Image 1 (cartoon, rainbow, N blue to C red):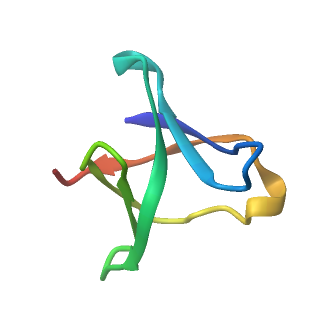
Image 2 (image 1 turned 60 degrees about the horizontal axis):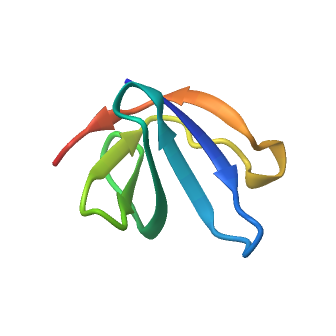
Length: 67
């Protein structure tokens, strides 16, 4: 799924999923065998193969929902 990553005014990473009209802060980042897994405040886990540098945000990237 396509998601947009950005940094909010408080300096936290935020994920926006347009198809679900969902915007949540990232509460946890972990490494996986396929890349980086971000856990959102609502409990969703999204896996990213290539997570961009925070200096290059906002950016739309492909993510895989794990849970």
